[in-house]
Image 1 (cartoon, rainbow, N blue to C red):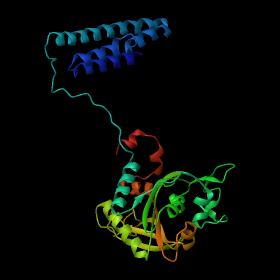
Image 2: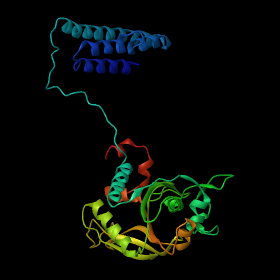
Image 3: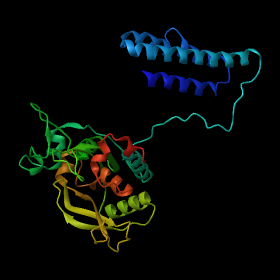
Image 4: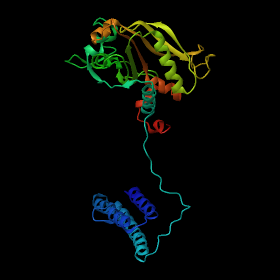
Amino acid sequence: MENKLLKIKENTLGELKIITNLKDLEALKTKVLGRKGEMSDILRGIKDLSDDEKKKIGALANTVKNELTEAIDAVEKGFNKGTTVKIDISEPGVSYKTGHLHPISEVKKEVEDIFASMGFSVVEGPELDNEYNNFDSLNIPKTHPARDMQDTFFVKGLNYVMRTHTSNTQNRVYKNFKPPFQVIIPGKCFRNEATDASHDIAFHQVEGVVVGKDISLAHIKGTMKEFLSTLFKKEVLVRFRPGFFPFVEPGLELDFSCLLCDGKGCPVCKKRGWVEFMGCGMIHPEVLKMGGIDTNQFNGFAFGFGLTRLVMMRYGIEDIRHFHGGDLRFIEQF
């Protein structure tokens, strides 16, 4: 309670230095010295203290109240005389802490803006979804390891899961957009796995889907090269490696040239000169058919990358758990 009294005194004297009119002064007086003001709250609480504390806090409360009353009266007299309150313009002003976007939100907005400039629409999907959208519509049968309890959060008693990827929105996009179209789907995903420096139960992804006529692998390569070069503000090279994903055929892994060593090899890229980035490929015809797309006329490509990992690469963050740790010392660095 002693610290609270001193804080009230400090804040009030600080506000008095920057008040320039009677209206604001009266509001401050009511807030601090009024019947329901801060000082009244302190005085009402003294009855609950021990006898020794009552004497100590009671005396301090009266002293602080008298000092603030005199200070407020002095400023009020200045206004009533028609004089201007003297302000030391060289004295530092009162600083206020302001909030800001989380680094993931910051990069997410930047990613959305880049893709929007390339003609992509931004779509959001549900985090809690049925098994059909999360698995079946993506050509992932019930016997597939991805549907194992160790990887997925299932909702007891229902055929619902916490989505394991933003791909769960693909089927909705196919059914609600008329080809040709190009869409990205950013959002949070969930995996039932042990956490460590590079794995967490919650993380962010960005899904991309392009459907049209005569789409090829060259379109994926060109799209991602343009996106990464714009994001990192320097030319970035990309390459394909074979990969497998049930909803694309052929399936590919896409890497980009290491930004720290310009492809020469360093500890970050494990001396390879390339950084693993995302899975992608040509959308499987069965997936398009389940979404109502005529595969005789249209084809397309899909990709998905970890937004959280992208943020870690950009800022050199070594532990993914910092993002959800709630430590303000980490957040305030950005």
